[in-house]
Amino acid sequence: MIAIYPGSFDPITLGHLDVIQRGCKLFERVVVAVLRNPNKMPMFTVQERLDQIRISTQHLPNIELDSFDGLTVNYAQIRQAVVIIRGLRVLSDFEKELQMAHTNKTLSDKIETVFLATSTEYGFLSSSVVKEIARFGGSVDHLVPKHVAKDIYNKCYAKTHPESAPTSTNPALKMNCPNVELEA
Image 1 (spheres, rainbow, N blue to C red):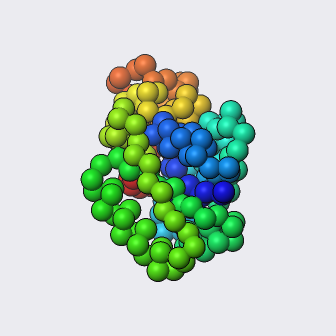
Image 2: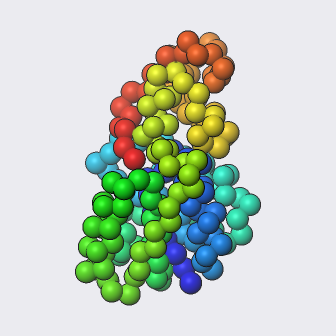
């Protein structure tokens, strides 16, 4: 059984990884699909996000990475997936995701949505939270994989302080992440 786990993953967080790992235990194959949305201004390019996910999930044998645009249901049909995985953190996620699941069901009754509640320790975590913390110079090492934290510091800090190596241990850092849209 093939499942799709779609999202922006800008950047991938430990919460995303939690859902991916648990999805891999439930399904024969999980396709982590990065949405290409031309209306958003992401911190990382689609290729950078795919690379971050690839490194973060290299220990999972039944994962595949891809990117797509358009409707998730159409993409799932193309990939012959029968399940869309969605992570839930809080009640407001459920309301939005349930509405989307019902909408998707009107588009294809052959595709089911499976909701996975994030583990308790990641219930607050979103890509937006990570970007906001980074924007104001906070450490994100405990929120994303280490290589992703380094990418974030390089992206934000190196632009304004190219003479210094990025570090998460200097609380006085003020990150400069221009044109970064904050979204979940």
